[in-house]
Length: 120
Image (cartoon, rainbow, N blue to C red; front, top):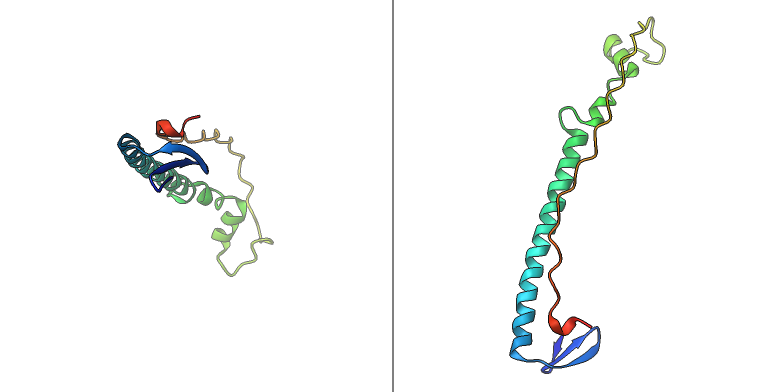
């Protein structure tokens, strides 16, 4: 923090502010803005992909609506008693689908180096 021409870092006086210090903090703040934009963009894209994986055309949400209960509901209609069907044909068991690997998260930009007067 700059106050009255002095530099304070975490409440500790580091000395008088120079033109170089002011330029350093200006460059650092711009790099931090770029880093923040990149982080938000990565978070948005990651969340979008997760939502698509869950609720997209063949997402995990819809796959869970295809078991025997839902087949009975579809077979006997919405007014039937799905838990007590008249007849429920036994279907052959299908082999389990291989588990989908977890998506790889995008790489984030490294944090910018702090200004020289912030280093211990």
